[in-house]
Structures are given as C-alpha cells and as structure tokens.
Image 1 (cartoon, rainbow, N blue to C red):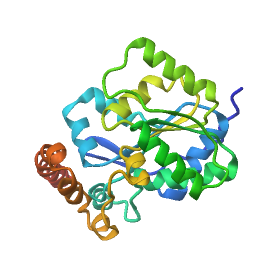
Image 2 (image 1 turned 180 degrees about the vertical axis):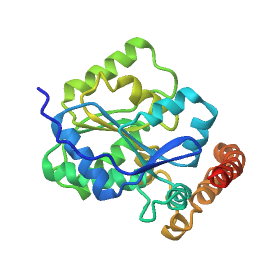
Image 3 (image 1 turned 90 degrees about the horizontal axis):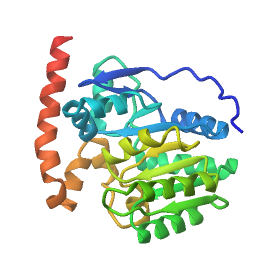
Image 4 (image 1 turned 120 degrees about the vertical axis):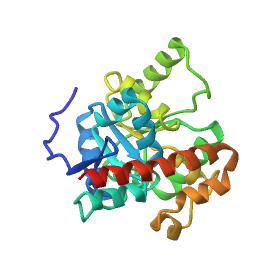
Amino acid sequence: MELQVEEMSPPEHRHIVGMRIDATSYEDATERIVTWAKAKVGKRVCAANVHMVMETYDNPQFADVVNHADLVTPDGMPLVWGLRALGVKAAERVCGPYLTLSVCAAAARMKLPIALYGGTEQSLVDFTNFLGANYPGIEIACQISPPFRELTPAEDAAYTAQIVASGAQILFVGIGCPRQEIWMAAHQDRIPAVMLGIGAAFNFHSGHVKHAPKWMQIVGLEWLFRLVMEPRRLWKRYLKQNPRFVFLFLKQLLKL
C-alpha cells in the first residue's frame, strides 16, 4: 500500500550544456530519498558528472531520461563550478559514493530495507560486509549481480520480481553510466522503490577500486586519478569528453 508522499519544494537547478543539475546537498538529497522511500514510490536519482553531461549532449533520448529524473546531483566538481558560474553560489558536490553512505546511515536508523543491483558477486559480498560493520542493523533485502551483457526479457523480469518481492524501499544501482540511468527509467513504474544510480560505489567501498585522495576530489582532479588507475578503459572517455565539455560550457557562458 502506497503512502501519501510528503510535498517537498524542488531544489534550485540549472541546465549545463543542456542537462539539468539540481543544487542539493547530502542532507537535502538524503531527506528527499528517505521521504520517497517511506512512501514506497518509484523515484530516480542520478549522480551526474562530465561524462553524463556529454552522453546527454550526444544522445537526445538519454538527455530526456536524465532531465526527467526526480533528482540529479552534481557528482563532479566541474558541475559544481558550473552551477556557481550560473548563479548558484552555494552549490556543493553531492558525490554518488558518499551519498550512498549517507542514505545507508539513514536507512539503518529508520529501518528502511535496501537492495543492491550491480557489481560482481564478490564486490557485493565485500560491500555487504562493509555496510554491516559500519551501519549496524541495516537490512539488505536483496542483492543481485547481473551479467555484464544485455539481459534477456526473462532474466530482466526475474530480477525485477526478485527486487519487488524483497520489499526493498531503496535500490542502489551500480551498472555504469549510461546503462544504469536507462535501466532505472525503464523500471521506475515496475519497482516501488527509490533507485539511485551510483556508478562504482560498490567497488569503492568494498575496496576493489581505489578512490581518489580527498584533495584531488576537491580540486576537480578525480578524473586524472581514475585515468591513471584504469588507463585502458577510461582514456578515451576523459581525453575526448573533458575538452569538449569545457568548450561547450564556455560557449554557453559567452551566450549568457
């Protein structure tokens, strides 16, 4: 049975190279997510970075997916600087992996069951152990490591049914951009839970992938750290997309 959703004013937002970015905070985003979770309604939260902006720029259909999400947080510092340049002076970063921890802490306090979708079986085991050690009492109702390929309709239906049957009210989706955002949009009407696209959060918190030092995150060099860690997988993304983003955003500012 769905509960009445408490009305909350939408956060201030701006469009950066055509993609909506909400000026939120960890506290504000967590409050919105918990409110929706208590009401057992399907909602979508995207953690946006430069890669996602450029994916939306190159694909109008994907832009529609992200721009109609219920919350789009500024995960990368370039987007925080973009918000500030566009007049949101108090804009701050709301990073997917850290938002995950904030939401898990609230879920443990409020007894809201969560589910995990993505990653490898081992990373989910390690992430589950991490959550149990750091957030005593957290209820992990379901965890699924889907194959790294296109699912058959039967597989997708089975996974969806498993998530729904678990009673999870918050679903963390970590299958990478843009796949996770498209998946959440396709399942929003089928899963009565708040879905968060969190990218590599399972791997970061399970210790399978190193996170950039805090100082590199603050000065906007997290992309460089990740490039050094995974050059073969990420070189094309960063060396192609980052300069394009800078050019397009400067062009947007000049027009203003």
